[in-house]
Amino acid sequence: MLSFNVLTELRQRMGSANEYDIEEPKLAVDGDTIEDIRGTLRLLRTDRGLLARVEASSEMDTRCSRCAAGVRASVPISFEEEYVPILDAHTGESIRLAPDDEAFRIDERFDLDLREALRQYILISEPVKPLCNPDCAGLCPVCGADLNEGPHECEQPPDERWNLLAELKKGLEEGN
Image 1 (cartoon, rainbow, N blue to C red):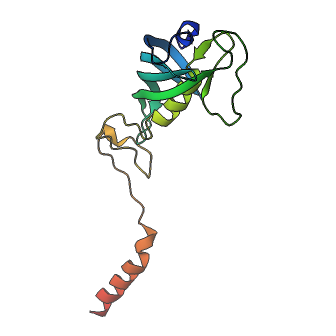
Image 2: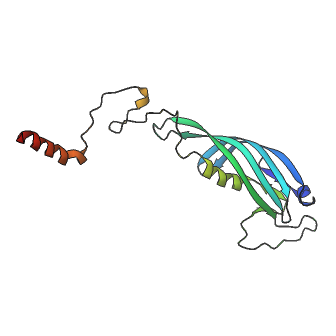
Image 3: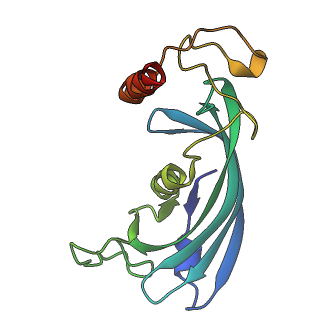
């Protein structure tokens, strides 16, 4: 569950804290699917709203950055964000918020939805270069063979950057 009704928490005195379990089997994040999100949400009543602290773990299917094999990568999620209600919890009146206030909003039903914050923090937490294993040999740059499957015979083209030195060496050897 990633959406919590927080009307009761908003009616508590400042400094009150509550803790909830987070469990979500799947969440779509910008074309990827994050799975098995598990953790805790701790809500602390502030003078404006609620401070949400999330500590969670998740997993995603991705590709090894060296050999392109399928990899199940762990994605840790940890953040602290303020959520501000758009309505007063006691009176139901609208609360004026500055247009440049970047706090997440608690909607008119007093639901605090973690999806957008999770999306943002997952994007910055997902592995940049996931590996199938730390010793992954990658792919052959010439033929594309998976070098993890063992050595293979592939004729490496000469590096053109060394041509001038090769000619110089050949000229020196002929001159001797």
